[in-house]
Length: 113
Image (cartoon, rainbow, N blue to C red; front, top):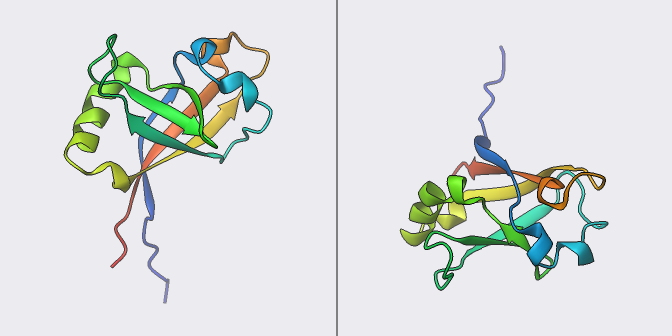
């Protein structure tokens, strides 16, 4: 009998981290690897974007979710559902333009009961 596999993570979105040049990514870029966990936090006081979501690695702000990708995610976070998401580095390209160096993927985690 074949064992039924239960999906634990479901793809939600992928993007290049924005505003890398203006934040602290330079201090941790050599520590980031595919699979590294990135934390996200709403930046509600951001004067440039009301849906801003800051991204952190080891307490260093590495950048933001791009503006064209953040509104739906910000809504989930604002409703208290931010914990269902897990963000991981999916690619690093140290030789690329700073705004193209870090790619992350967000997954929705299955609620284990």
